[in-house]
Image (cartoon, rainbow, N blue to C red):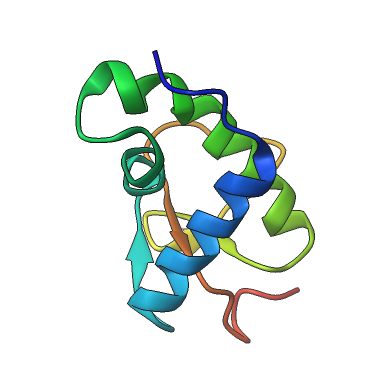
Length: 93
C-alpha cells in the first residue's frame, strides 16, 4: 500500500511531469501515479482515483487539459482512457 499521499503532492508531480514533457505532449495518469507510488501495481494502482480527482480540479482551473482521443473532455463526464496535457489556446473555451 502506498504512503498517504495528499492532493497537493499529486498536483506538484503532475505539473512537473507535464512541464518536463512540454507543450503539445501528453502524459498518462499512470505516469503520475508511478512517479509517486513506484513501479509496482500495488504502489501506484491505488493512486489512480486520486490522480483523476486532481486532474479534474486542475482542468476546471484551466491549468491542464484532459484529453480523450486527442480532444478535451468534459471534466465532469468522461470515461475510459485519458491523457493529460498542458492547456493550449485551442483547448480553452
